Length: 423
Image (cartoon, rainbow, N blue to C red):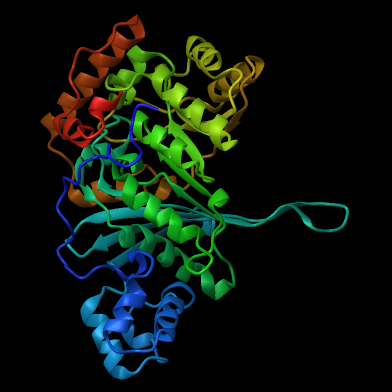
């Protein structure tokens, strides 16, 4: 490995939340015990507080009736019990999808999506063939610097990294919604707003809390962390030998096209991304998931399918094909169901497993960042027209096989600066 596992980290460049109190759910190991001891309280009080956060999913210190009133007041003055100031939930797909817009203390907006999958099929013994699942997609940053042109979050740009507690409190919010029906989260995926590996330390802290039996208690194998291709971050994960699933937002197997669809490819080309993911799979024994948004006439051709099969054949890998959600500033449309099915069949014939994913919550603004983008307001018409013209020009070049000579966007250049010297 060329990168040290601790020194080469993306810089903390974005402003913190305006409320200086740390979030209670994001405290590192031992911090709560140290605080309780500083208050002159017995050590068991830390366990009571932790149970309140993770078992009762409290939103305010006053809900901890097992604590003395004075200690509840001190807790409230020292910490934010819930880092999310307000939630706005939109339900779609006949109740199977719940998309939530979370308001943070500094006015920032992030999104999470809770997706319900009922049990289906029956075995001979009467048990369901496929058990009921509840999957939560969460954000790791407010906005995103990567700027993929088919993603609504890219329209917002990067606001800031999320704190560990702000990541975890999205999970606690979903758990509260499920509790009245006796259900619980079965899977958590870091595929919401932001690039997780550009906020890697906080993401790893959040995964540790999610998998800790004394905190959220969800096994690491039920967690997926995605990246659009931050190669040094993937290599650092490989050194840590994680048990969660790594997902790569690939979207194209040819560099000229991926330069357009995933601008980060201009820093770390697709072959380098896949090589890093391949090494991670060999180390962990965990299959890598490749996400591929299907865009009509852009990346859904037989040439693209064959390039993708050639890139991944023989790897411990699986491809998820996802029809593109409509985004206002792009001229593109989703591939037809027939084209997606043909693409999947061609991959499978080429020796690569593929699954077609159904879009969820389109009537609730399903595209990543779409609710926040809508709240931010429609960009001026000339701006939209310019974006479309740039995308058309770049995609025409890519389809001819010409690579983009454009530099990374300025905020993305700044975001990857901490990794840039470690290729």
